Length: 222
Image (cartoon, rainbow, N blue to C red; front, side, top):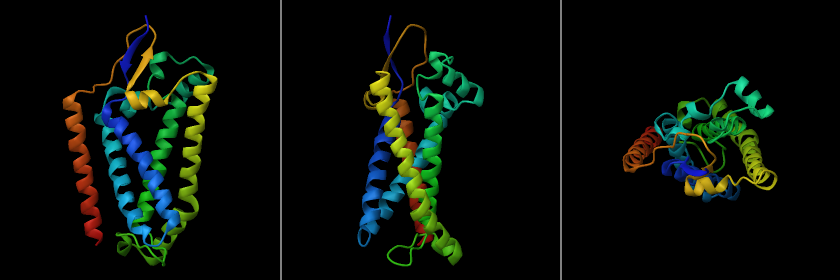
């Protein structure tokens, strides 16, 4: 009998949609430039806080939010492409989706890092720019503007395309579970993600620690 199981805990869902908002805000303020760059920096700090939180939550979060539950080796990726992977191997992120998640986290971290040390010589200088050479700051800015942003736009476009593909071609709505947290699954016993008040309180504590770490980092630069 089909039954419903908690896949995405509330902290993971809030992280996901908060990061979506941050990326949209960064794009808008980055292209506007000028006085908007102050908000660009603030949103960037928020994005860094979220990314650090996700790294920690990848080890301490609900079962399907943990890296160990969805990061797969080449053999399992090949099995997924052949259609041989067991259902419990794709209840959360499937192997290809896992690669997308890791790529997004890596390039967003690189984008934030280059923003922290960058200097566009016009309207923005990162708070940690004084700790690097002028050449390094300019190179970071070049990457930030010419490479990183386009990689992230491409990854976002691929992510949206994948969601639409699963919806239209396979009849699977990937957005609903990221809103509601649950998925309807067939028979068999599958592990549900823990999502009670204790885990949510832990997530809040982790988030506050990450925010404090980012604030300290920015303050050191100033």
